[in-house]
Length: 324
Image (cartoon, rainbow, N blue to C red; front, side, top):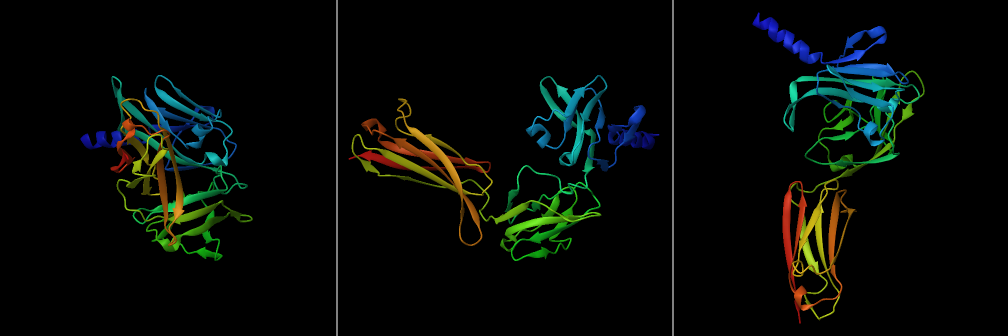
């Protein structure tokens, strides 16, 4: 009896997500589903407090084709006039709430990957014609040329020298839900690549992807600080520059502590960043924060402290600016 109960409960957790068919019929969803672009989709997720996940671009453009409602016993997702760009993961789960705090109920989830097939659009459309992909030696890199037709034959190509890149199923694999995955990126993989897809007709080409190799140790930013001059005269114009090096796709935030801060002495702070190529195929992000004192006074003399912070931690550097 207990075995049957546990089997039933696992079935329930798998069947939380269903597709509404014509004439009020329902269909349990498998791991993948193929529909023709143009068809409308209605999904239901059992439960009184359901959260949905779907391709993020539908949110980006506040797409009016998408409708999500919570009814008494189920959540409802309707997507009208589907397009190839809607291809992706659709999932739902129940939220367990205690007051204002909610968490995901891991036993009550449902998920399916939906292909909206379109012979005119073998690749899932993207808003840009060019994309930068960072190759990091300690994590896989994904070339996201996903297809709308799961049976399409997809190959990866280098632009220069013009050649097909062999996917051996070990170092480079193709995942129909993600694209090509470089399991262990190296600097040899850098360059411009594109994908080609074929399915009962003329082959189609994806957008181009610029692969940049990154080799910056993970951790807090590597920061330095310098002043235009460490000994100045009254009324001089002084700027202090805080510079941080890090991974290209990791943001660095700056905070300052300076002598005139407590007396609310006006200063100008400007932040900016750019990518630099170190000449060996490695790309680094250089972030700068410049603190400018227009008209130096006695109360501006002292230590200028910069705190550079990323998700890994923070680094503090300081320099003194004194009056002559």
